[in-house]
Image 1: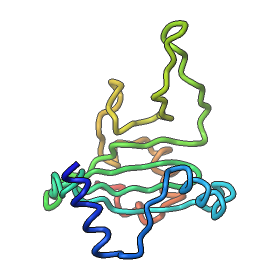
Image 2 (image 1 turned 90 degrees about the vertical axis):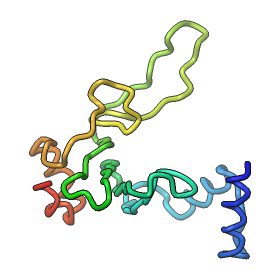
Image 3 (image 1 turned 90 degrees about the horizontal axis):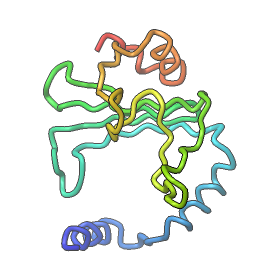
Length: 153
């Protein structure tokens, strides 16, 4: 709780008019702005892996659009260290997870196919961008042309 209080206090100092809304309110506002996923295309860099600045030598570049989610983790200052830790294509067929047993429902469901940052499956091992298949790299680069320069990493 102390960390949360500190974090919220810093937000209030920097943005005194900030409002704290529920996830539901945020979802409604988001859907008003984005009626569908057709134009969603956002990219951001996350430095560190948590609050307050844990693992500051880590940097994750996120790319999200209507076709896929991609995350690449780098050890800052360490050349050629960037690895793909999450790549989920939204154009592939999906299915709901089956409940393990009658009456024991699965409530923690995530869409994952190629590579997932949670590392729950044996295939979820970070790989260099160049280790993705040529078809996967082309699919990514069609949506994010700036990643063409990364294909050698």
